[in-house]
Length: 248
Image 1 (cartoon, rainbow, N blue to C red):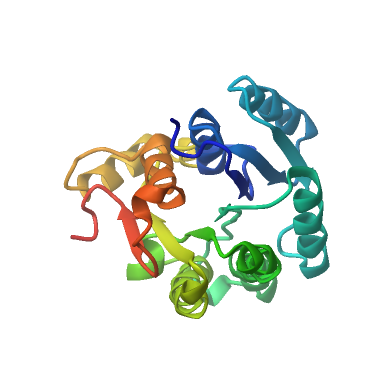
Image 2 (cartoon, one colour):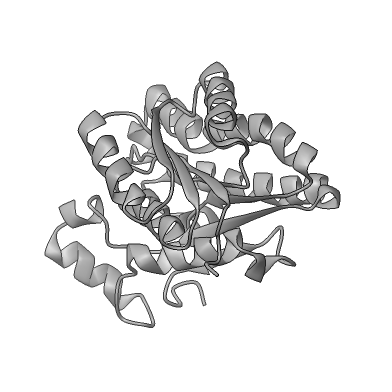
C-alpha cells in the first residue's frame, strides 16, 4: 500500500520548484492533490495532467494565500471538490532581498504577507476541517535562514523565523485533536530560482556545506512525505533541517 493512499493534500505555490516536487512525490504515493498557483495557467494545467498520470485526482486553484478571504474560499472549494483535507503543505513564498538600509516598506510587507501571513490564513481556515475529523498534518516550509539569519535577507529571515514560532504554537494548540504541525527548513536547494545565481556564488555556497553539494527538490519532498505519512505519527512541533549539515 502506498504511504498516502486515499489522503487529500493541499500544497500552496506548487507550480514549480519545491512545491511541484512535493506535489509529484505525494501523487506517486497515492495522495489526491489540490494545489495553488498565482501566475501561469498553462503550468498549472500541465501539472494537473502530470499528477493525474499517477491515477490520483488533482486540481489547481488560482488563489493568493496571503489574502485572508481568498484562503477561506480556497479551503471551502477544496473540501467541496475533494471531500476533506488531510495534509497541508504551506510552501508559497517569495524573496525581496536587500540590505536593511535600502529595504523599502513594500519589500518588507510583501515578504511577510506572502511567506508568513499566508500560513496563518491557510491554517486558520483548514483547522475547522481537521478538528472535525480529528486528524491532520500541517507542514510549513521555513528555511535555515529563519534559524541563523542572513545578511541582505532581514525580511525573509524574519518571515521564516516567524513560521517556526507559529508551527510550534499550533502543534501545542491542536495536538490533543491528533493534528500535527511541523516545519521543514531547507538549506541551499537547487531550483529554478537558484539556477539564476552565478557559478561563483553556487560554488561558494557548496563550500559551506559538509556534504559538499546542494540539496535537490527530492531531498525536501522526501521529508515532506515522511511528515505527511503515518511514519511520523509521533512527530509534532519540530523543525527538520534539510541542509546537508550546514547548521551542524
